[in-house]
Amino acid sequence: MKSYTFGTKPYLIGITGPIGSGKSLVRKMLEHLGALTIDADELAHQAYIAGSPGFDLVVKRFGSQVLDEQGQVDRRVLGQMAFKDHHVLNDLENIVHPLVVNAVENILDFSPLPIVAVEAIKLLESGLKNLCDAIWIVDAPRQILTRRLIQSRGMSKNEVASRLENQADFSTYQDDRTVIIINDKGRIGLWNKVTAHWENLAHTSSRFSKALDWTKETYQSFYMPLVQLSTQAAEDLNGHFPDNENLEETFDFLCRHFIWETIPLISGRNLVISTLKNRSMKVLSLPDQFDSQQLVMLFKMIEDFATLHLCTHITVPFYEEFKTLFREMGYYRYTNNLIVETVDDLPFKWDLRKNLLPEINYFKNGQKK
Image 1 (cartoon, one colour):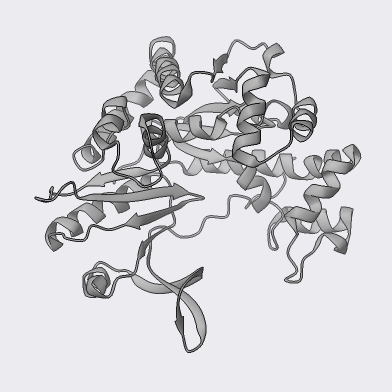
Image 2: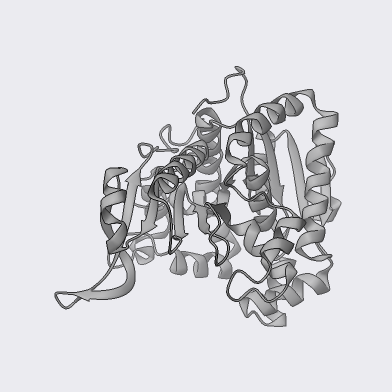
């Protein structure tokens, strides 16, 4: 799998906006369009796990009270302290933000893809904005944000009001690199706005245009088995996925997953569903019937695709009838903490896993001066 070798750092799109605005959904949409994406919030949490450079700094500042029984920083305890005391929040951000900026810089150096998108609620305050070539602010009217947060996160009106009031007023931010995306017309409406801004970058930035040409050429090899995100694809697959009752929900499912199609069955479509999170590709379902040769070819594509997105490993559900095939493909068995069956009176979920890339320490240089 070839990597981007133009001799320049990738084009970086920063995504920010208030809680409930749809930042994460925009990030997943850009993933489908060909960007390597970064969740800065997840990087912030990784910055102070044991062994990371922020761990000692956090414990020194806040004491052992923030540690759990395993000796890790308890995110819940730390979050409660920061929410109650603005000074605690400032001190925590002063520790974490420089580390996150450093990690993003390292990811840009590693990226096999020429376009990268970073989602960060504190993008404008943390210094990440200085790395960005474009800044996308995702926003929505206050009443829509309130309704979403009540419905999706179970928050009360007072909790929503408190969270929103403590966040920056994104609508007042001015910068030549900035566009504001108002997410008030559903997922398909948001997709139309995202693709319009994506295409506009190709017209206004020669650097982005060159990177996009490379991306389209590289992604083209995946397009035969990979269902491309589109309204038409959502219409074609509407009703295929459980708990998705209408076109909007089906489209949302497509945004958050990658759908691969093998040779169709007489009884219907033959789909492999995968998701990408925290540098891991996880296959969620395998077809009941398949041609082993076709499946091997398909998984080679999925693995190449995952490697382009810097995934260190790929996991697949374990099925007894598939074990020989996947062993030949280099997969091995491991367990995680999801309960499926009991073995020797111990609960286990058996999965298959294959390592794709060595683990990368994005905080390798610590806090830059």
